[in-house]
Structure formats: C-alpha cells, structure tokens
Length: 321
Image 1: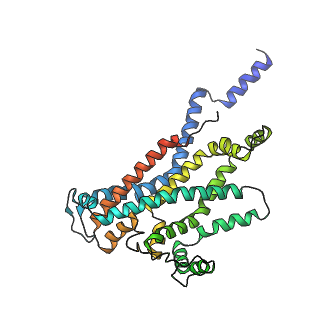
Image 2: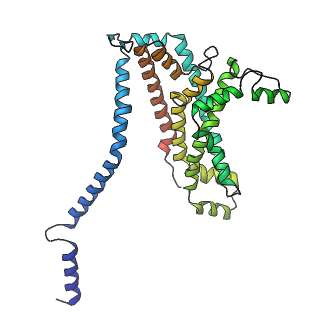
Image 3: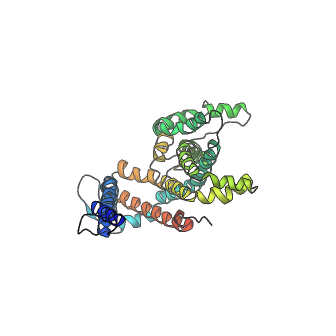
C-alpha cells in the first residue's frame, strides 16, 4: 500500500467512526438544525396559539350565544348574524371602514415609499430627517390624539388659525361629518408613515447595488430604474406593507385609539369604524354575543382580503428575468 493511500485511510478513520455511514451522519446534523429551528419559533407559535388562535375560535363560538359577559349563556343560533345584517349602524360602520381602508392603504403606502426613497440618498443630515419622520411612531397614540384634537379644535385651533390667516377660512375639522373622517385619516397616515418608511428602507437597502450600476451604464433614467429594478425587487416588501396596512385599516386596532380620543365615532357616526362599533356593543352595552358575531364577520372579511392580495401579487414572488 502506498504512503498516500495509507494517509487517506488514516484520515477517513479519524473523521468518520467505524460503522457510521456518512449519509446517516449528515441526516442527524440536519435533524439537529430542524430541532433548533423549531425551538426558536416555539415561543412565538405558543403566543399566537394562546393569544390569537384560541381567542378567535372562542369568539366565533360566542357569536352563536347571547351573553352579557357576567355568566348565563343562551344559545341563539344565527340570530346575532341576522341582527348584524339588519343593523343600520353596523352596516354604516362597515361602509366607513371600507372608505377608510380604500383611502388609508394607498395613501400610507405611497407616502412611506416616497419617504424611503428620499432618505435612502446619502445627503447631509439625512440621519436627522430619518429620525424626524420616525419620531411620531414612538409617541403614544393617546398623546397624539389629544394633541391633534387640540390643533384641530374649532375656531381657536392652530390649524384653523393658520387656515384663516391664509384666507381659506375655518372648518370644523372634527365636528363636520364631511371632514372628520379625512382628519382622522391624515393623522393616522402622519403617525404610521415613519414606521413603514423604515420597512421600505430596509427593502431598498437589500437590493444589490450592481443592478443600479449596470442600469446607469446602459443609460437608464430614474423612472426606468425604478420601474425595472426597484419596483420588481421591492415586491416582497410591498406585499408585507400592504398586509400590515390592510390589517390596520380593517381591524383598526391601532387607529382605534385615535378615533376614541378625537371623535368617539362621531359626528353622526361618520368616523365609527367597525372595530369601534364592536367595542361599543361589547363594553358599553355588554352585548358580548352580538359583538363576537360582528368581530367574526370582520375577521372573515380581513382573511378574504389577505387571500385576494396574495393572489394578485403572487405571494410577493418576483422573477429576476
């Protein structure tokens, strides 16, 4: 036996114990990685199960009962759902939610993307501008609602004083049904734009730089570069932002604070989103069964919207071709 062959046999014995096939050892290592991955995601999965999945199932079941929340459940069948579709206030809240969603999602998407494209450039004090755009998101929504309520108050509010000084007259921004929803909408966009700006900025920074260099060499302008490079490669991030903004718009869980502080659903139910009307039925009128039925219906609409969004965007996939 030659010296090279003998050395190779010795190295094989050192790296692989006798009787253990190499393929079996690789499979064991892969299983270890799977176990480690499952252990890392287990806390989040447990939290989703306990605080999201189980409450959603219980809420769906509660929708078939009449309950005041203090014991005494009486099976009502589909009575809550029949009442829901014949309740003009609930139908109005669904309409308001739809209008809010149609305006909120595209406006927030475009503003956040525009800010991300703006602060991506290397300019003096760009870090300061990033901080200023993100600053509203670190403030409590309750504080934001109180401050903007003061700014928009009739006659003596800062916004009305500036508008009057410019010769535009004054408006009842929160007291007129024609302006109340738009006022809450703009405040919501102002509050959330910095958060989604950072998400878009992370997606933009993840695009390989050599794509832009090649486009510049080929003579592509800014519009062509955005259309053929930035927009296609930003599709997964765009889908993520669309999902989050739709959940915020339909569920209104974060915008609920603004509505509760600024308008209380008024005037004349002009800003009463579905989530606010559900809150009223559950915690003001103690009609938990009816509120659970409406919440289940809103969750179903939200789930359907997610499926449509995934279908239209092909799950955020894109091709480099």
